[in-house]
Image (cartoon, rainbow, N blue to C red; front, side, top):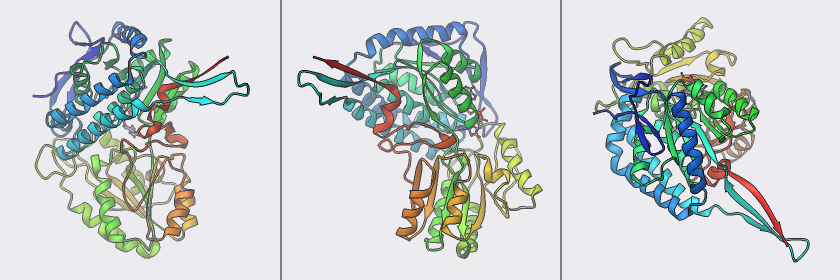
Length: 475
Ligand code: NAD
């Protein structure tokens, strides 16, 4: 049984009543699995009003009470993980083991936010006059509006919800219409955990219309978005027009730097497996593979060997390591990168064409012989496609790595401490992973620089975007 879908406004699950609906598909089978109601303007007004009303009391709630609810949701996530993961694989496509992994790591996010929200402190500034007291207070910003994507439907939503609720804000979240079950499950868990009505509201609809309406409303005070750079810039501009705080987790084009002195077989194996995670539909996916000349042939051979063994199929089937792309429009989007590469005379080493038959399947694809100005080397592919190109020395590869407007994640493989230090000091990226993949833990900040975004989620930075600073002085 697939998750029942509805809106969640002021503590009530709403559907029907003549609302427009949208079909939800399984990307592995193309079957319709659910029907999602869209919010009307009256629904959005109701969500705004209930979030505003709830803020009046939630902002004064004890951090202990907020913490207890977040912890309860963490436990419910573990208890219900099997069913939620199955639904997520059905509407998003990733293999069941990856869905389970996402759920379990999200339970940790809830626990960590539950602990950290009790440690939102202000400070005392020593006065010039001993009779004066100077206090810096951190207060919740107000009603937040958030828009989350389909690639990690549970993770992207829970991070924003935990940060908002933990800091004393209320939130209206529009989840991903393509893969809505996980966000629906989150609403049910907060409801069951006893969250007061209006603190969390879930809406669905035509993304541009909903975001425009919610951001323009004088009730909302903060905008949080995860998605493409183009949409992020549009939403940030609108938020700026209305002087609203933003957190923007946008796209990336993560460079991978493999130096001659690294363990090449290990690097190639790890990177191949990491590349196909969620069929490459990951903002921090390794994207441009720069391999130092002497190691190039060895790396490429091993990388291709590993990718050739990857079992592609329906994520619910045993042994499947990579599922379909999440929806129909991603197939031509990935094909365009291959077409551009072929036109430029590059070599498609493996893959390159969508798989025939039902489902939006695209095989692991490796392309060599590409110039740095090709589409695949400059635009975010968001799929299981990897360009591998050679480089000569460290200064050259740093310059090439920093040449794009993106600045999200980066990956380095080297056994030289000197190279590791130089590269981590020089890469223009919000996250640098050296010889392992270590980002996106609840206790570590996740976020980009340059066009890849504004602000961090996770780490003790997680609440920064949801709090305002008030200075109080008295004598
Ligand atoms: P898209 O840009 O149309 O949509 C991306 C996400 O943003 C979707 O969840 C969508 O519902 C939402 N969105 C789109 N327009 C919006 C608006 N005006 N207001 C609020 N939300 C809006 O593209 P797509 O085909 O769904 O996804 C492909 C691209 O999106 C990828 O190339 C990738 O760059 C980006 N993306 C990034 C992430 C990420 O984690 N940073 C996640 C998913 C998609």
